[in-house]
Length: 57
Length: 178
Image (tube, rainbow over all chains, first blue to last red; front, side, top):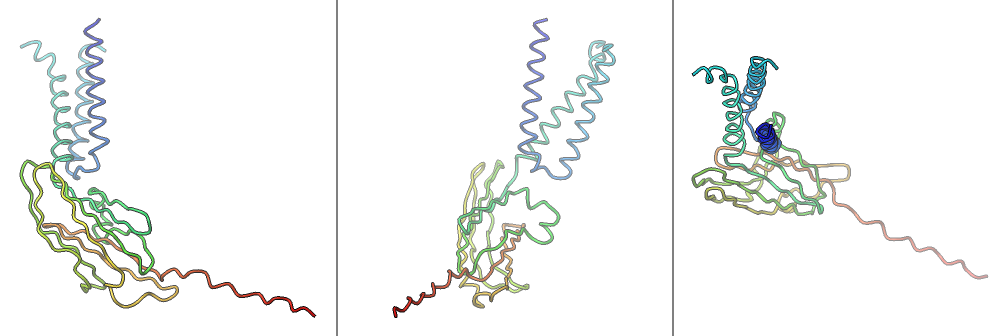
């Protein structure tokens, strides 16, 4: 159980870090950079979905 | 190996996450960025580096509004070098009207060390533009061009007639005593 709390904490920190970077620097991204970020975000959520689906969630 | 295959989607998702981080750092943070600060009428306007990417700004220039003729306009141009090498370029600032150059405000070579900032300052006086003050109801637009290496920034500045003070009070005649 304790390890899952740690995982959750780590995930929250990652999301907060990326959220900060995105809020601060997304306006400086080029058009290609924004598109690549969008594609990677979509792929990331799809892959997470598939992973949790395989685990029976 | 079986565990690796089982977690394949998780690892791929983490690769995407790292890719997003890499894009934000490489494309969003690293690079050479220029910011213009313009002060007139007790107000400072800041034109951030990302503002120049807007299509209408690229096409028509960045409009900063107007000031009254006779008021000085102060420019501060900051170059932020967020790369791992020294960046050197010529910086030129000039004022144009109807495609004709009126005055050169700045022309100097600037070298910026890695992850450092350099600032250039200059001042625009309305008198240097010539032509006299605009008449009542008239306003004039000028283009301030800032050339920095290969890029060129266009700022549209307007002048309107100088503010005249209130007319002197008309003396009221004292009532004559009869």
